[in-house]
Length: 151
Length: 262
Image 1 (tube, rainbow over the protein chains, first blue to last red):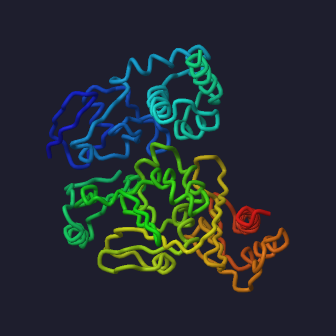
Image 2: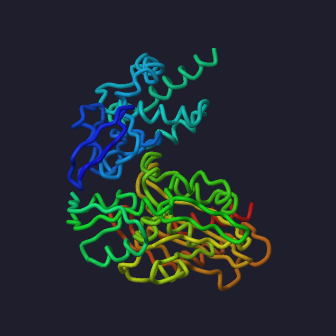
Image 3: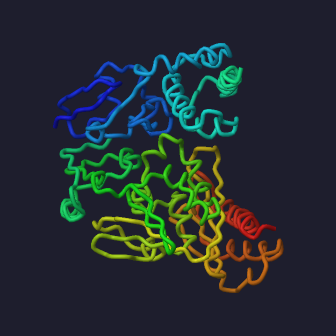
């Protein structure tokens, strides 16, 4: 079957199998930021925005994305650049594998709630697992970024 | 890993129902649980074009389309006002925001999963399911029915002066629950709903009127004791039956006290 997806602002058409998952479609399109960290829809590494809503691309059929807009980290470099430095400054991440999913969901959080409390950050990012850290560094990074915006 | 031979976006409920009569067809909800299995699906039926992704509120009821996501439930002001925040409390620790943006109320309720927070909280209210062929069935009856090949269209909650509270025990924040507990008071009748026993949720009414009058710490404890005695629990890798029964008592007491404000 053929699908057409607006991928990072660009219209992309492809012939796909009915059971192709969105994560595999996106990686085949060169969006290698989209990672598979688990097989159980738990880790959040494959997070992308579907019509601006964060979803797990490992659990969406590519067929379901037909006619929709999909945004990956490749399409959000400028928005991500605003705050990733603050997380890096904390030395929060070690292997970095969880980073793209974490950044995508942080972007979704800040679009939905531009001034979240620490508890709201923890709640929104609870579905993003990091096996290197204890999440405190990431939280400090986001908090420093938010404080810097308040000037 | 699930395999799918054909993918169809149904254009009517009749088409979805007809396709679903084949034993190898599956209606795709959020696909989160379905994806975990090794099912060889002949036709995957997507209900996404049927406009069933909204929550409608009238003075008498909420009508929740089967494709409404758990995140929509969590954020819906009217629903959470009626439930006193119990709906949001029930879903907010289900994996993560990205998961809840996909998981649907129809998938959660139709599956009648033992672990379901969603099933537990809706059973606390005067709730119904609308089935395409089976019509409107009380959720309490639906939960006891065997799975068939009907199509769940909507979940309906009648507004009947309810008060509710929800508590669950999880070993880690976003894990499956070890036990779920919802309490409800609908037009003066109290009930406790216990799920993840680990079997599917079951309702127990306050037949002894232990909560009659104003709820106190003593009456909450007495009702919790009653529920713990009457509610069957079992063991699995998440907890023993004895531990679950202990949780039934503790969570019921906490939920009743929260609902009663004492």
